[in-house]
Length: 261
Ligand code: PGA
Image 1 (tube, rainbow, N blue to C red):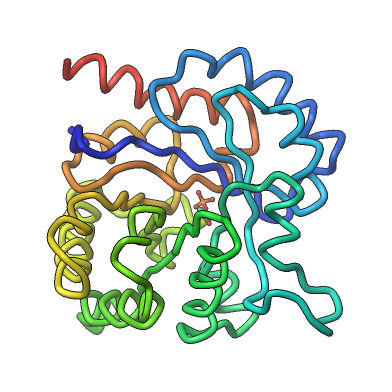
Image 2 (image 1 turned 120 degrees about the horizontal axis):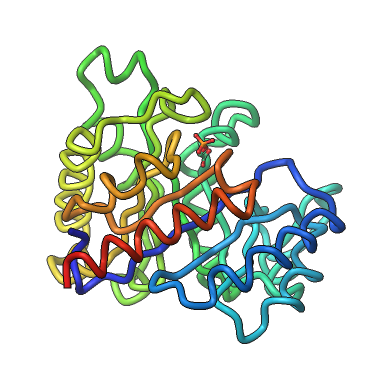
């Protein structure tokens, strides 16, 4: 099972779905279902939903965050959003480096690194996404690609700040494809990522950091991922859009934890 020293975190990533109205209706259904959840429940929602959802989730199990931000503290960047604006709206965390941002908006590791550092300075917990493409996997370079993503995106982050950061391993070929990695495959990669983090920082940092798996997570495969010792939680896209389905994933973890007591 997941290492007891690390809290299990289940993050929903809504991408560009949900209006303010549908976000609040979602919460109304989800909140009573998850009040007894044994894991941490995060929701990365559209910018417009952050403030109203943060207001409705005070003193609940659900933590609201954003899916992206700019790396500057403020400035003439029409259409962009700063970490302190998100924090002021009630966001507690931010996803950075999602493969859709890397692929569709040409974000590179250097830019993502600046975002990670900005998020930490301006009071948001970064959720750093990394993952190899199908070509990289087929070429046998997965480990190298992930090691460079980690070292370039985390360059200059002080060790003592690493406890505030979450890493999400999302193989690009598994996102939105209904073809998840196998739990064993994911476990092997997570273990390597933890070793990379140990090389960059310390053993203590590597043991404490939460590394989540993402890519076609559904209620029927969630428990098998959480059974792996280096998988500390899940980043869920499509299956987080329905409160009932997302709740099944959250409670699969709970059932799993109870089973292993
Ligand atoms: P998916 O997306 O669960 O729909 O595959 C995961 C993600 O993009 O974070």
